Figure (cartoon, rainbow, N blue to C red):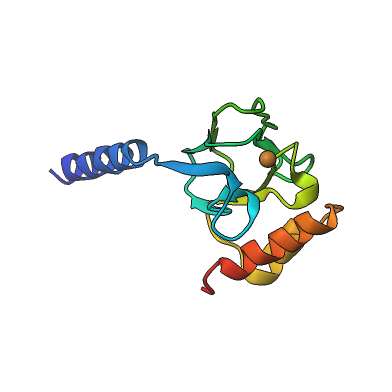
Length: 148
Ligand SMILES: [Cu+2]
């Protein structure tokens, strides 16, 4: 009897894990609420296996991973300009995303999959040889994340 209960619990846990992969939407905008050329929202906290859908609302944008700034073992991704792209992220960690056309004017996004690192770790994760406006955008994005 105990075995049956344990097996049932395992099946329930498996179904819950498989059934709850969420899809998050990030819109790519020529004119955002606070700035032009933005990913909105600029930050997503996802669970492993979730999908991020980048939606081309207006303007000539794409979404692509920033080289070397995503977890080891996660593949790079690159959407086409003006096209939606969806990526399923299974590796835990921090993913930095840019629009190829507007990286220089700060069109970047941050996706964290799995546990949310503390503020210092996140700050280190977004640090990099970015254009000045992209650096400023990452600072704004970090500031918008509620403290744990
Ligand atoms: Cu863009």
